[in-house]
Amino acid sequence: DGFLEFFVDRCVFNSTDLKDIEYIYSTYYNKLEFARFSSSVGKFVGYTEYGVKQADYWNKDPSVLAVRKTLKESYCKHNIDIEYQAALTKS
Image 1 (tube, rainbow, N blue to C red):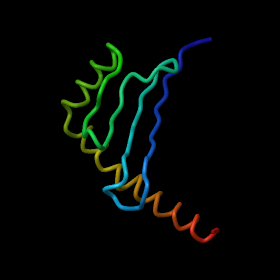
Image 2: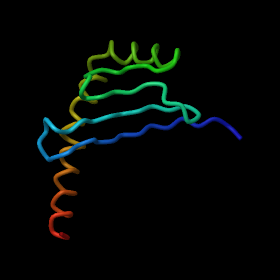
Image 3: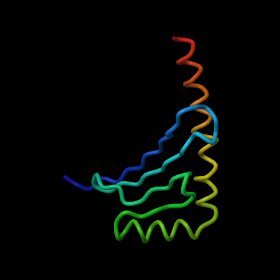
């Protein structure tokens, strides 16, 4: 028994164009998502009382937001380009 905190980075896309890519960073505690950053929204949003406080804290720090905003291109775009090429060579 115990408590579990984990984070998930994911990319939602329907093409390799940057405008068609959404980067999402979710924070969970005991299987409950308490806050999320979405590149479409451009800031953190809280889903629980604690998550709202955390989102407010993170949104006040320009360096935290800057890092999350750059991941759309450096993490998502980079990996999507690789995956698309791999899928195309197999089809």
